[in-house]
Image 1 (tube, rainbow, N blue to C red):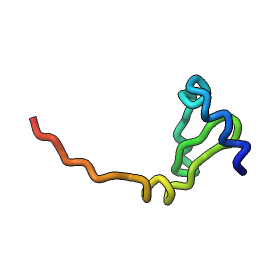
Image 2: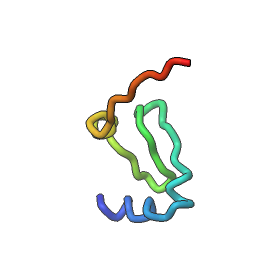
Image 3: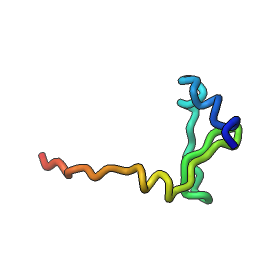
Image 4: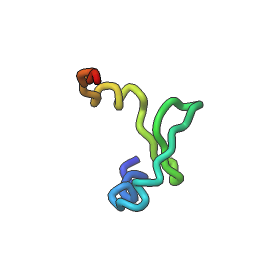
Amino acid sequence: TGDVFVPLQDEQFFSQVRFDEELGTITWSNGADFAPEFLYELGKEVEEKRA
């Protein structure tokens, strides 16, 4: 599974990320993706800024 993530080290390839509605996560054309649960665990709380 690690080999599929090697191309993500290239900034141009990485920038081609897409959101897959069916999977509910981000994906790339080579089949690389991240489980939504993994992304949730990495998430950080942010304060809502009011104008």
